[in-house]
Image (cartoon, rainbow, N blue to C red):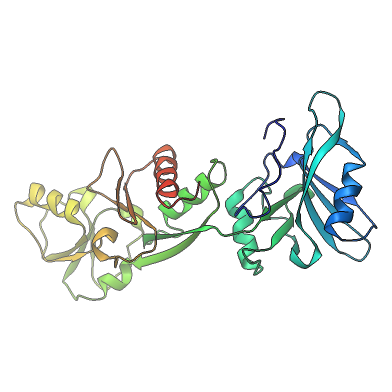
Length: 304
């Protein structure tokens, strides 16, 4: 909001409303009646700090109410109000203390609200890191399935998406991780040896000797390749043939449905692809590309 005057009047029905920066949220003691009309008049009779947009009232009975306020100005240190919109009364407020939740992270607030069974017609009041306070009003995050191979654990793409959501200006997104365990795929065959793409996957303890394609073994073995189409292309270049292969590409193994999904694929190198509810990013994506893909995904799903 950055000092702009909040325009109230339509926020009560808005989904996923998180005021940012959260310094605009004021937590104030109040012993009056927890009634919308009474609270409205109480606040209209008061002045507020020039950055205050949201007021959380609390009383000695541990009841809470949340109101959005429209200031007359941002120029003076304290300003009178011209409008008040009561967003939630005690029956619709859920108070949560969680020192691990960043009050500036919309997705983290939404995830916490879902964890505490806050419904889409309630308001979560969260005391998070550094004892700072924010709200998420009517939480209904976009659920994004992330399909990723393991090991390594945690999966890299999932970790990168979490990191992007910690700083990017995006609507709340809740991640659901669906893993493809390479050890389970390897167990579907009984070869003399395995050939896997690289050491970074952590696949060193399988039921047969393990060789690493990125090291380009000098001696061709009677192995089974645990890899994707790109690995097969490397093998053709190195050895001039195609070995038995167990597919490991998430794009080939996932089952399409209506759920928004993100996964990665080695065949992409410089940009991501989006088709229906599937977003595919390159195996070597950076944070900027993942943020761009997430932004396009939320626009497609009307979560802006």
